[in-house]
Image (cartoon, rainbow, N blue to C red; front, side, top):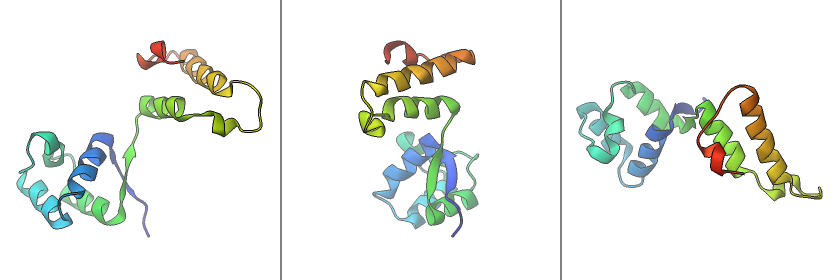
Length: 116
C-alpha cells in the first residue's frame, strides 16, 4: 500500500472532524462545490486538489508539521517514561537541550519562554 498523504495540520484536523459525521462521497462533493462553511472552509481551498483529497481519504493522511511544530511536539510530549532506568529529572534536561539547540541556531519561539 502507498504511503499516507501528508497534508497541513489544519486540513488534517478538519478532515478528522468532518469524517466523524460525513461519508467520503459527501466530503468530496462538498470540496468540489466549495460548500463547506466557516469552521471547515479550509476544505474548500483550491490548493488542495480533489485528487489529493481522494488519495488522502483512501490511503490515509498525516500532518506535515513545520519545524516549530516538530520541536514543540518533542518538547511537550517527552516524559519520564522515556528515561526509565535513569536517575534524576531527565525530562527537564531533555527540554533544556531542545531549547539550547534551537537557540544555538538562532531560533526562538514564544512557547519556549514559559515552558521548562
